[in-house]
Length: 171
Image (tube, rainbow, N blue to C red):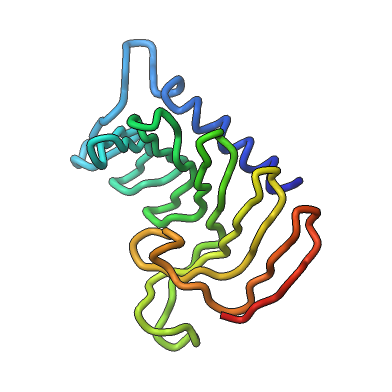
């Protein structure tokens, strides 16, 4: 329930990003500060159909972001950066409910016991369409926490649709 409330709050905040990106004199999207670095809300086209809206401070992503796929006509993810580092992301289904999330993001060091070849890790949670947790564990990754490009690590808990642990796996 707590997780469901968090994603609903994030989803609501992310859908309001364009509304807050206005001020009295007009739009203030894609502005640079005095030193030529990105500041405030920016809209970037990442591919032919993917657009990202993110808040910047001192040239770094810092605050809420969302990505939309205009070909599919939907929001695909919403989350938060702090000081240029990803902290939280929800991957969304076509119906607007979260399919999975990556939270508690951390950097992987050389001597901290994780396998070599990965730069980041996070707590990765996959959800049933009902919002109940389907699986929960650690995901290691490099550029972005795409589950198909990352590696499951450590103990993973698998849940039934009522929230009961049905299996624990070590990957």
